[in-house]
Image 1 (tube, protein in one colour):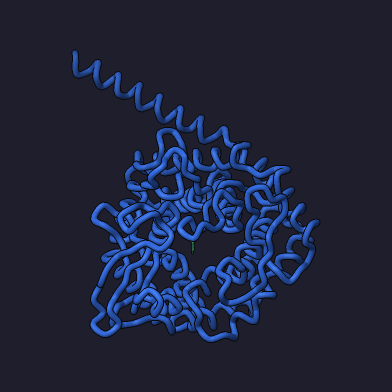
Image 2: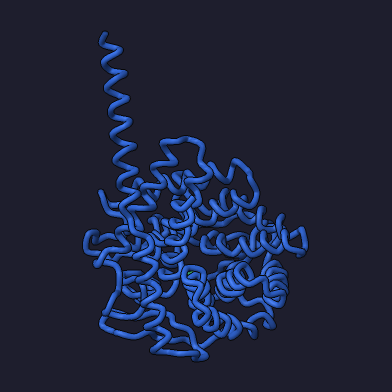
Length: 401
Ligand code: GLY
């Protein structure tokens, strides 16, 4: 009798929790948020037109984008064209498509330069990658194939990873350094291997992911940001931070790159070890979020929490990643947890606390770029917008099926 009562009670609880989760998920109006993004994109275009520079940030107290010149050393230049491609995908506006073409093609000179660092993936896959996906333009495809070959020249087979920052080798004495952000740029290598490029690019990307999984994290799944290796022996030397608070703390965007990166690597390889790892790095992140809050502080262990800046960009990256990852996990409860977390992140980012509205023409406020350098703190930053609109489109695709 007691057993039957407990069973009935657990069924009621299960139904209650899954019904209330569904309710929470279904009350997010994604079209309204996409319309907001469209409005902000139009505001930016009204302000800057077809300039030759790219929006990068709006700092606290400012009301307009700071624009940066296109250069191989400017890692963010692909995000504005990428945002325009997503806005075109959402609206089918020919006008936005024309601007997307203009800003994408400004990046063509980057493809003729010798390898500078791993950011070539961010620069070209967000811009030309989305452009090719949406237009099938053959010249864009060739640019991406060339860029993948260029990126692969930074691979050190002895270590098994790409050298992320050649420029940091000497000043920091980091002979071979591989940073967590570099995980995202493996996507261009996988894409090239599948689209007529050298099949070795697949092996390079997978070796990079596996080696980083082994050495780029602490036991608990928290990222170091930078893994340093010996170039001759290939040995792992140390794990340190560059943009986090300290070597032992959890830099929020670094963990976001890991979640997004291992989700993508699982999609591309189908290897269970990468799915398991994507879940591990995700669970650590979710378990450390402040109670009932979905936008993290810039570093989970920053010393002055709750008086520390947030990082909306990390939340946008993770929301987008979780909307993909939930599709791969087998455990129905975990699937629901990830989906609900992603929606809660999107809801929080879509609140007046985080959306910019008339304050400035970006989508989102409150990202942190580089706290140790004291740069872009509590700012609107273009990559937060890029991953936010990507996540909205992923959410829309998920809920319209
Ligand atoms: N890729 C640099 C950053 O995440 O800030």
